[in-house]
Image (cartoon, rainbow, N blue to C red; front, side):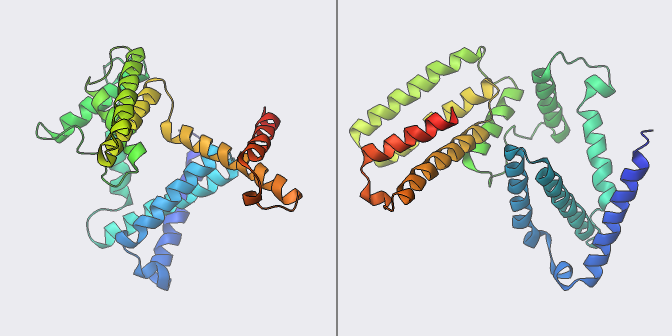
Length: 262
């Protein structure tokens, strides 16, 4: 057994004890429900994602602690309801991980990560029975881009995917062409639909090339904001408002920011 297990178990036991105390004695913790915690949990996950993108390991550590606290909190509420406790949560995930990794805990062979993912989805469907649909497990409340990525991953897991990843670019070009056609016609509803098709095709391309589209767009958001902030700084240095600058001048400062980055 790993020599750190004892230390880890003690730390986890301390968290369980603290959460039990807070649940019984703190007015705020006592009144919480799964429903009231839900949005807070979503916020914590986004904060973790932000820390990961920034590469801030200290913040990643803190946010993981917040999420672990939420997991324990939900388990306490589940125990109060007589539905499950933290032991049930841990035992179930351990059982699932062993079952869905037959190339580690069984006789199956997986030659690469892609085969592991396909096996995972096939085993998941087998667990849920024949009546289960492939896309049933995709949460309706996921952000649209994350949902598109998850949908594509799931259908790929059962073989519905491009034979060669290069083939996806023909689909991207096709969707862009259809968008351009609808833009010429000026039908707002159709334009929205075709924009969605273009985004979906690009998400598919990103997935096939091992790029997380959500992260890619977030990096671009941050890059844009950083460069625009430089434009604002240059305006402030001159005691001018952005509205007093012409587009040509703003673009000059934009290129200046770009050059500094490079």
